[in-house]
Amino acid sequence: MYESRFDEALVLFEKAIKLDPDSYEAYYHFGNCLYNMSRHQEAMEAYNKSISINPSFADAFYNRGLLKEMFGDKPGSCEDYKKAEELGKPNISDKTRFCW
Image 1 (cartoon, rainbow, N blue to C red):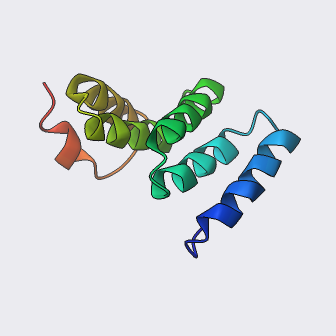
Image 2: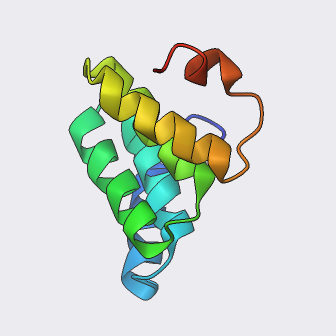
């Protein structure tokens, strides 16, 4: 994934998910691959799954917030950014300061 070989990484994360369907990290990285491939709705589903498995995973909330912002859902994105910040995600005040 870090070499931008998203198609190959996607296959590997799918295998990881089949081996461990409770791996919130596998769903998160699967979502990151989909995001980078502009498969945004599928990425949203992967982040949702990651959060449902581990509701304390700040990075998934942050990335889901990015997608919600992209989709024009400002209240939803603010909610996710604030949750990510509450969970300890550093340096996101540039996102949360515009939330009301």
